[in-house]
Every structure is written in C-alpha cells, then in structure tokens.
Length: 177
Image 1 (cartoon, rainbow, N blue to C red):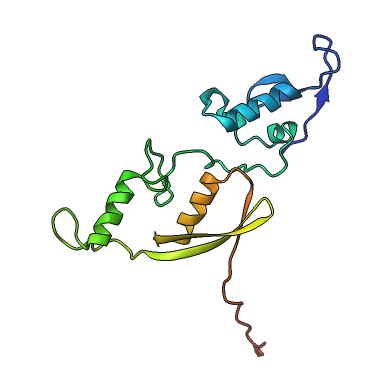
Image 2: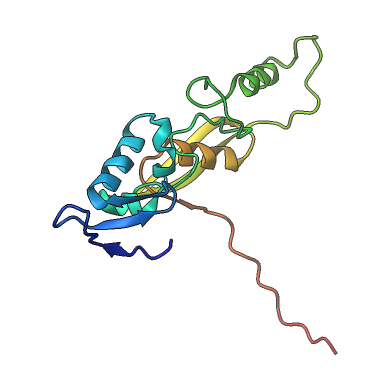
C-alpha cells in the first residue's frame, strides 16, 4: 500500500481532508472514501468495484480487520475458481456440481464410470477470522484449496489459515567429504 498524502485544497470544504485516489482517478474526501468503501461492501455496486478491496477505504471506514481478498463477495466456484452467475448450495458452479453427482452415482450421463476425476474426501481447515479460531469442514472436496477459496470468498473479515501437518523431518548432518 502506498503512502497517502492528505491535503486541504482551496476549493475544498473547511476541515475536510482530501487525498488523491488513483483507482478512482479522483480527489476524494475521507468521508466520501469511507462511504464508497461501505457501499461497495454492503451491496453489489458495480461502479464501486475498485473500492471493495481498497485498504485505504477500509481504514477511512474504521475497519481494521476487513477482508481484502479479491474473491470476497464474488460468485466464484470454490472448486474450479471460475466465475459463474449461479452457485449451487452457495458452493459450486453447475458444471462442478454435475461432476460431483456423477462421482457419487459412479457413472456419467453415458453410463460409464468417471475415469479422469480424482476422488473426493472430507477435509478440514483451521481458520482464524478476525482473531476467532474455527474449523471449516466439507465432506466432498477435491483439494484443500477448495476450502480456502470458499473461506476467502465468503468471509467478511480477514482470514488466516492454520495447518496441523506433521512436523518437518530432521536429518542428521552428514559429512560431505
């Protein structure tokens, strides 16, 4: 994030701090910036898409733990990460949902077993959202990234992921010569 330089131009209202907003290509007051950021995060405002993930707008709005993920609030399939107009159960695009149904049934539309599809398993992920720890779990997933994408898309607060992997193996130092 670049440094924001505030000014009080002669044409501005007294007592209002202004700054140059490069994404909007405008000089804005801090209250207008905060208002734009709130509006872009509360409803689907296409004209304010640049404000949705702006850290300067979040600070002006008084939000310190807001999610700055570009996936947040979008209709992106958590499995294939493609944009869509409709998410089935708020999770998958129609195509991924149909592939999941084929995997569960053990056959595709032609009656053959799906051969190129990797198996789906239950996965869990520890998520720290604005300081609160919780477990995200899903039964039929293809990868851990699927859970991560869904959390980044659906969370309004900043998220951090924690893993409970096995500790790294320690190898004894071996003499090279």
